[in-house]
Length: 319
Image (cartoon, rainbow, N blue to C red; front, side, top):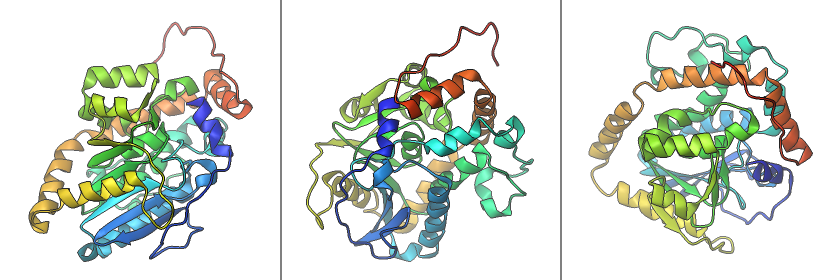
């Protein structure tokens, strides 16, 4: 994780793409390829590190797509440049250790399932992990299938948002991982909920506890992806081969009746999202505890300093 997060500060070549409804400077863009929409995380100079602004943009575009649902059969989510997403923004991570535990984790009581709310209807939420999660979790409310096209590195929160998709296409050599523990942080962004559903509990335990970075080919073998493809970057305006394959998969998933497809999608997600709120609460609470520790401060400082972290001695008791 550390090496890939450090790369978020470096610049990368950006291939041109047609943007039909957003400007190139937007943190997330929306394009149309026939009846398939393409959402692009658009901060390639920092390897599409996730920020609150990017989350707000995702949420706004989800609303736009929902309002224009008669124009889209499916959505493909990908990253601009050479990465899908290197994970959480470093500045955001650094600020968490300076905030209070209650503000990092507080969410008011919710008498209904989280997905029946729009975030703007919730009472005040300060800068909390739950609010940060919610911006990107809005992807789960899309009325059409979502396919993630992992065109390059997807680490921690960046990999987590790919789990919100209904299917994934990965580049064979892409580096993927849930490496939170090497940051001194409990995993978040709902990965403790969705990952076991996708690969089974034992494999999920291994990936989360070890923090191992795997390739796209290994992810496919573990059941974490529907398709794996060789990564060949095509010159603009030709689509990236991973995105092109994701579009084909999206078309395949929506080849039947749109009414039947969309109602089935809601049925499948309803089951998949059962107990999600409990997992989100546990993740946010556990992360808030970690933010106050010396290990977390060491982990973040190690990333900023481009070195390996040196964590403290074993805890006698931890909850």
